[in-house]
Image (cartoon, rainbow, N blue to C red):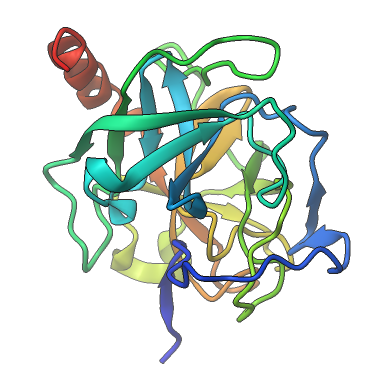
Length: 254
């Protein structure tokens, strides 16, 4: 049976290699600081999951990336994990809230909010990603999306990309035809029907943006860049009410 992979990077003591080929499972290195909402979740300054800044105090990620708030740092305006270029913003986390319906076996409800210890400094390199709303057009087979992260660049690799990379992927409707009932109504799929373009280990929790909106959270898949198994993402638009409720009820709390 094919192996299901959550796309969190479990090996935290890694060596960054800068001599790889220039492509990440069909993508490429981004212009530094051009994906302004991208966040890196780190333990002891080592990247383990991605995230998305959605306002000055909150980052959205995957619930399977949960760790106690006391050990997580969120880094914004990060590009090269091995080099500090002076543009990084490093924040402690005061609260971590996973969605109450998260199921670690099925990955349904794979959403998590992290509250920063202080407001992010918005500037030319750091800006929140807009969430879809009721008026946002539904995704269809013609929709192209972008996924980004520091995940591995080769299937079965144990090394993260040292630099932020992105790849354009197609929204794939009727994802149940690939995964059956394993894909719930709270998930969407994106990738390529021919394979070769996908997120992978180390990209978990990161953003899938479509038409300028945050539509997905990197969640899971069977292998990476497989033509028969596209990447599976948490369907953000199903969680906007929960996100807004949490933010409005806790913004006055530490």
